[in-house]
Length: 143
Image (cartoon, rainbow, N blue to C red; front, side):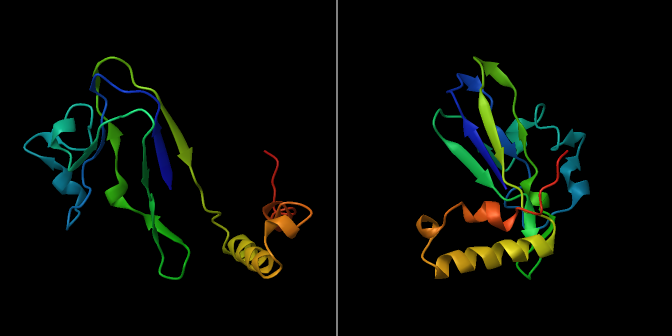
């Protein structure tokens, strides 16, 4: 998942564009027609299906992956393709928060079990340490 925070207003341009948002049929080859490559959001920003104007204090949230039908992360969502339009006046300041789901189903299951146990025992206030730390205590990897 991605959360994109807009930290200032932009006088001109700077939109975040999703070229294929809401397309009913997605075909990567349809992104290039008549020498227009919709993946090049800087040159063809005006042709995207969804454009979000940066406004200070707002954010855009989207899923980057599809669910696999069993409650886990599946394939990349092609409709989440996005890019930034050129800033034509002023400056643009953003901050990203990428929220990753652990690709290990075993650790995801452990996390879900720990959260269910925490809920049964009365919530985080009754725990001596934050439950997430306990759930992942042995799963950390130093890089």
